[in-house]
Image 1: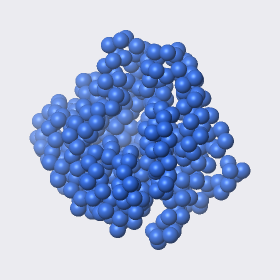
Image 2: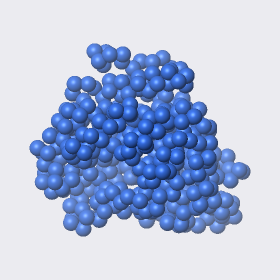
Image 3: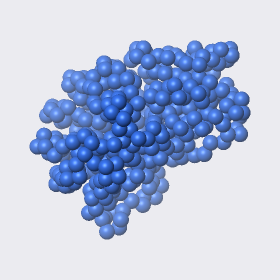
Length: 419
């Protein structure tokens, strides 16, 4: 059976340096497919879709809300040719009812142990309109190594520098952050994978650079330390979301190859200042994740926050606008208060204002979003800051003998004046 698996393109964040990471959802899903399925993967962000190429069955994997409408367009074209289409992925779960209008089948939930039945139903002409496994999670032990062989590896680099591969060590999250939909998608229980499974998968990845995409590694301190101990012999270099603010944890993370963390920065407090310093003390860089548009944000507040980020020597910053994704507390609050003025999912890029802020006009918040990016990268452009982080990791790789040659001739700037 020829199964074409498609990952739709989407509009990237305005002002952000352009590069494409290999997606995680599709390769995890591909590992759950029956052996008789011949899968062809198309990441529309790096290649075009041939709508005339033969396929028995189409799968559309959608991670982001900003991808969903493009996913519907793709599905409509294939269905017009009489080819059945099934949707899955995070954004499918967030937009399930709308997506059913464009699909022969919608799969909701985690795929392990479920695809044999789905494909049997397809072969027997009994494909179900909805397969709903939301909150009915498979045993975490059944999560195997993602099927990265479906990827076009050479396409995922930035100016010849190999980018990170995505991997996960757990699912679920015990936190319930205001703008986040993980509570709806993966449940409030922390579900760690067995260490041997995680290490086996990491070891199988030829790329030395990883992004551990878990919602947060700081959910169980002992588990976190044990994970880092297991990772040390791999000599991988990796980034992740926050790490526990504990000396033993940070030391083990550094030994295990922690490269940088994505740290949410919500204010200019001494707590945040110290948090960044402590990462730096252990040789771990910090890319701040800064959300703009909260109800207490004023123009003065946002400008002072950007000044603070420059003062504390943040390595990089990613600014986003508060976005009310469905099935989040943010959406419920703003929708109920009738403050959302755009339900066009193409606008939900995290770089566009789609709601009425409390203390600002929408256009003022939009301009402050651009101000934050421009001001933070005024002295050192974004690609130069990225180069400095990449150079540090390459130096570490050379020191421990894991450095691999660039994909093609390196053209990143060697000094600020070359940018």
